[in-house]
Image (cartoon, rainbow, N blue to C red; front, side, top):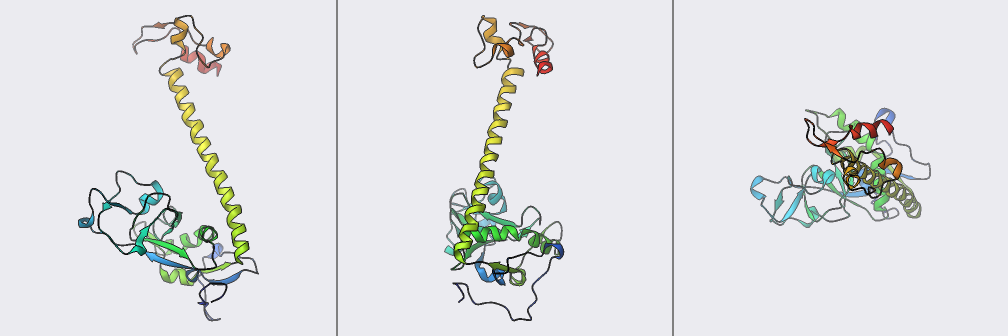
Length: 264
């Protein structure tokens, strides 16, 4: 054992796989080793239709990893080896699929389930921080994509155990791993927060558009001589105070929506 890592370093004459311009760079003080030696990699099961049921635990495929539990998710009431039981917070690695979009590392953030084939449940060995290892896998994604492309058939590629053994990785001491994990994790949290904010703003914009230009809500209070709620007098003045008949049904007098769009 070296710092808790299995001593599976390859002989001096062992050649690691190369992916042209995607060769990874690691600081000189990091210890080199095969990627495979840094974790336990448990492949999922090849489920059969007869094992599925209307209830039970979900079968976790790449679709569930990327989109969560849905109406297309399969369930099973059968029990399998605990090694393929996926729990919240587990690190998963999809090793087969479309190279650019499917082969990657993921955190499982949904209820417990059973792991489907073509996905590894990854447990870093002692001395390797799980969050650091997640970012290490993400850093190596160009290598995974390059390897999978070379084996691609009918749009699909794959990463094998042999590929993981032949791919060079490196790691620093545990305190530095944790510092790196903290920094990258904080950045990821900020990115996710910004994504959620953008999604919220988009939802608000859609709601306002529907209210103003589809339902014509600002016109209704003006018909009663009232100020539209939550709207400035300047914007409210752009809307008429009555509806007229048209081929499309009742619309604001004078084409109110066109007037607003020009002003905006």
